[in-house]
Image (cartoon, rainbow, N blue to C red; front, side):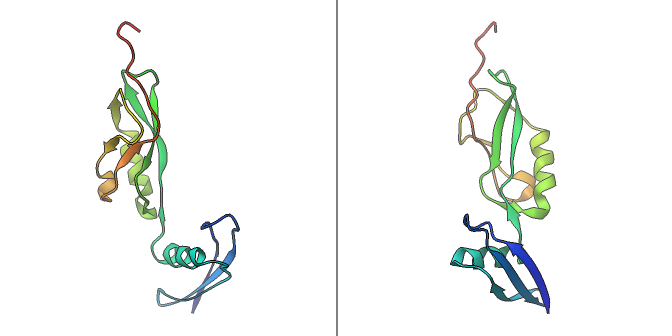
Length: 125
């Protein structure tokens, strides 16, 4: 039997939890004080995922970069490839909150979206 110790991020309480696994299957979750803790712990030890946040280059805008994030969480193992793609892309202004800047980041099926606005630079500026 394998045990993993986690701190829950499902709510502000930050419960310390112990997850027991048998051959990769969750047998028990202890220490959580709410259902979200149980759900988080099971997912974290079997298929950890994260939202990725970063910035992307912009051309022709009032700023050089726009803040971006993944529209949903991606497998933790894909984060470096997602970041590689973000770091090698450049969007043209204007860009607005919610605009999809990349449809399928690192073949995860998850889009990269803008989380801020960058207006086009006025001609001659």
